[in-house]
Length: 470
Image (cartoon, rainbow, N blue to C red; front, top):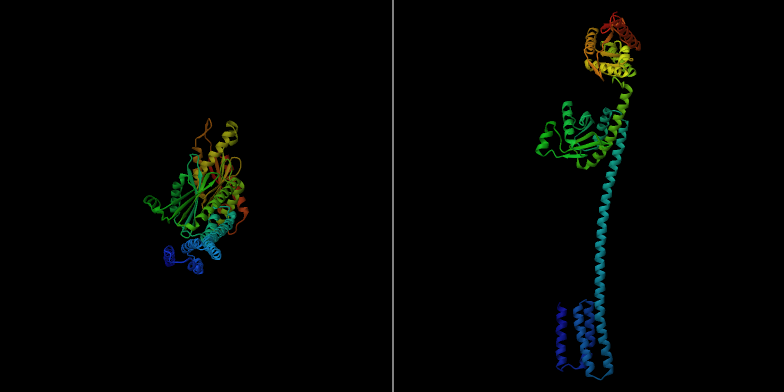
């Protein structure tokens, strides 16, 4: 700023002196180098305004000197100096603009470099995060391979405990399996708990499963329950639910087959649980299909009792346990009376429905620990563990009486049937009171003795219970 003031005052003073006639052109010519030096100095200092002021004054002074003198050398040198001053002024302007453009490009380049570095760093962090997530998902899929070895839900619960619990940050997980019933409602089939804090009370776990099932009926794939709102807190408070609660619905072909409930999970593991839920959907379907195939291979399609082969497998298991722990065991042979003539009279459709109804009556009146199978066409066989002959007679009589009093309404026919029952008991019917070693011969003998007792019941008039007598 001070340079501009000095240049302006100097130019103004010289101009006034020149206009008053006190400054001769010769003196102005002699001062030309000083003016030119000043212009060059100001140019170096990049003071564009001062350069222009001094250049304009010098150019005007030169024109004035040209008009006042006839010296051609003076004229020539003055013109050269004036043109040089003007050229230097314009060059300074161009140089300044060029330097300013270079500076702006430099700043722009620095900003772009900084932006690229920040973008590069963001990309690196994003790649690291993605790499970490991908590694976690790959590890999760590797863990999920162990699911393929699970053919029942008990094994699935063991794998969830051993593989998932150490890898995820959560308090408790519950796998709830459901099925649709004809009325359009959902029925709880099974539920298993895994995690660091399992529910030890089975009834409490079942109530929690029913509550989750009730909440998830909205049809949403994922539900996040805050457990801080008064309604939700009251709803789940009896089950000591850990916040937050995530409910992942398990769908196969748009049909709900189960729910994965996660309590106290970490937000960083949320997407992993989504992947786990999809894997469990497939595995749950696989286990259900396996159990269906298994059930079809061991369950008689008509009467819904064990087929003969599987029944004898269970019979051997129960007899081995009875031999080992010296328990009593009884075998009941049940036969529908006059079934051949009944079938001929009413037809095979009615006959099949009758067998189905009789099997249901037997299941309703036997104990939960008893095992029933279809022995032949209209014959059933029952193994009743830990029961002596007198108690087996009471069980057989209860079954016989229930069948006899059952009125069967089948298609357009209303009928009644009766059954005859023969039974044998372990160990007394084997001729010894103490058996220390198991033998398959015992199975054959007990069945043969029960069949003989059944034959006697038929001979004595049917619709009765006869026990083998030693």
